Image 1 (cartoon, rainbow, N blue to C red):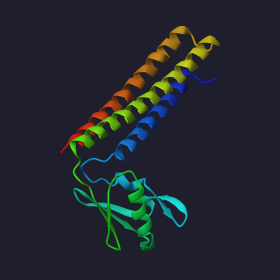
Image 2 (image 1 turned 60 degrees about the vertical axis):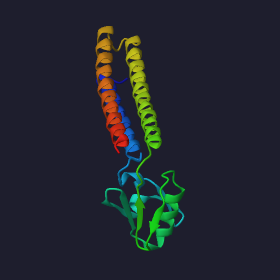
Image 3 (image 1 turned 180 degrees about the horizontal axis):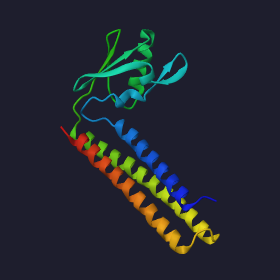
Image 4 (image 1 turned 135 degrees about the vertical axis):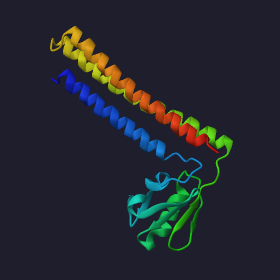
Length: 187
C-alpha cells in the first residue's frame, strides 16, 4: 500500500503531465502569427512510415506571417506538401522545389472566436483530467483510511494538500487559456 506522500507525488506528476499535454495542444492552435508548432507534429508519409514533420525538415519563421519548411531529403518535398494540404490547417503550401513556404493569412473575426472556443474546450478537457486524478487520489486516501493505514486527520490533511496541488495546476491551466485567447484575438 502506498503512503500518502507517494499518492501526492504520483498525483503531482500526473497533473504535471496533463499541463504539459495541454501546452502541446494549445501550441498547435493557429494564431495570426507563424509558429513552427503549427506543423511540427503533422505526420508525413515518408517511404511508407508516418513520420512527424520536425523529424524530416527544418522549420523556420523568416517573416512574421511566413513559415518555411525545408525537408532534408529533397525527394520528400511532395509528401510534405501533401501532408500540409490534407491537414486541417487550411493553409496552401508554396513549393519552390527546395523548400515549402506557408503564408499565414490574417484570421477573420469569426475564425478567431471559433479558435477561442476551441481553446476553451481543450482547457476544459485538461481541467477534467486534473479532477479525475484528484478523484483517484482521494479514493486512495479513503481506502487507506478504511484499511486503518491512515487516521481520519491524516487523510483530511492529505486531501487538503491534494486540493492545493490541484488548485495550483488549475490556475496554471487557466493562465495558459488566458494567454492563448489573448494571442488568438490579437489582430
